[in-house]
Image 1 (cartoon, rainbow, N blue to C red):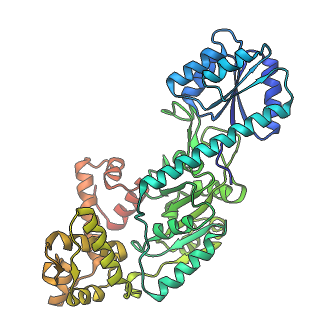
Image 2 (image 1 turned 120 degrees about the vertical axis):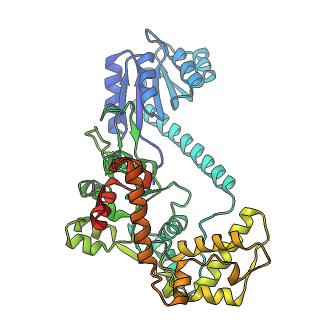
Image 3 (image 1 turned 90 degrees about the horizontal axis):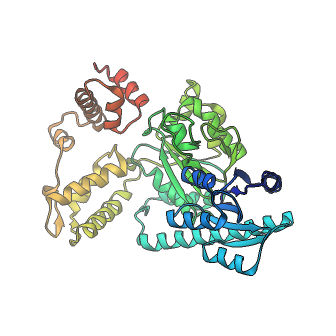
Length: 452
């Protein structure tokens, strides 16, 4: 796995030296940017991200030492290795005091430059590992625990443990609210990449015009407003795991680019022609039937088969009712800890009520229900009378329709109409208010026959 970037900024006023270094470094697998002096290099650093900088000392306009002091004062730039044909011990000490990592004298052998860069990258790796460890320690107790008691989930978690050690993509399927991201995080934690980045993105929550730039990044000037180059989320996950939730919402035109990531380990930022190598394990999740989407030409079959090397299906909560009591008690404990209160006990009657519900919204719906119940109940026990019985429960008692799916449709229609009213019919703004993609909003407007 690789965490370091291979972008090197060369700062030297001699065109011949820059050309020679470019040939050496590109042969060594580095991507090279050239600057003829310190001022031009500062401009590159303001608009880009370079972990490694090779800088000459004697240059017009701004020399190497002044350049070092400038990037230290502005807190930009990465590790700097200084170069000079007029080297001395005093000069080297000056450079190191000003913030340089290393110093090499001209003329030098190609291997000397490569070795100096490799040492600098090793230092960067150690810095990032320490930062990651500090972040993990500061996070304390994990909020991503998977709680279960059922045999079905026991089998699923055993499969997670086996699959975690592989580098192959995994497709996680299941109804909304079953905990697909939790399973993805478990796969990541138990893998060899567990200490590396886990980057999650919801493909249905980003506007279709922005998702390519968000995923793949862009170069400076690639489009209006692209004032500086920006790495995408795939690059941020380099060395770790990329989790693509709602993968069925990925626009068709971007699917070949994701396929290239899976097959070649390469991306192209928007506005760039040269590919960049990335090392990510891709986990994807969907509540949709991707086979049906493939049959209807809404999803590429080659991408589906590449993603579904291993498929993990999470059963809905109604098919593993023995998990309901332990989940309910877990959520009670989490909420009680958060609010600094003692955890109430669930009465047998309350547990029976919870077990008998279908929970069409699955674990997420149960968690929300328990949170509401605790707002209304402040005693030592969580009685059935203390629970905020909504229309689903009342309708069941009265023998009426208590379908959560129908209620969800009614709620969606109401929110879409309100969002369109607030934005005077502007669908793009309405989609932002609703926190869904414009494409998804247009689909729902058509499906529900909503007048704008």
